[in-house]
Image (cartoon, rainbow, N blue to C red):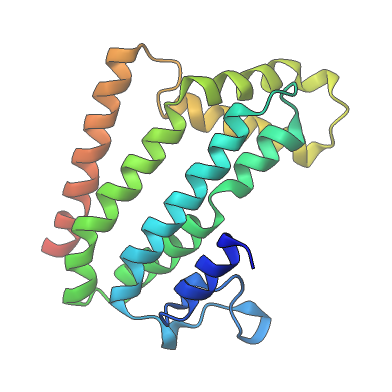
Length: 188
């Protein structure tokens, strides 16, 4: 048995539904009735760890960047993070329990830091930019071209073209927003 499968089994035995590869519900829908507030933070941390490994693999691969090894790999790299965040923020806005509100003080800054880490990474952006610059010559379909365009623009809008000092300011602003956003929601 591999270490990864052992880790998955150990985490799954904790009862945290986010640690399962697939949800064992009809159409693999989110099992809201099984999710407890204490599941979110460990699941998000675990998802970020997995995503960092996936993103590191994209950054360090030596083949010429292309749609599959960069764009598609990046798009799939943080699926676990996206699931946890989607469920959390939907419940946060729909239920707004005190426990979910309190958790926002941990979840939001962690999520914001992770997004900044990705979108402000110069190595990753260079790989994306090289594909974006060659996109018309890569024989891609319209969906693939749209995804390349979207990812490139997302990185640019989040500060990838800024200088190092400007990127640091963006990180600080993102962290402030991550703290102030939940406070605002709580006050409302």
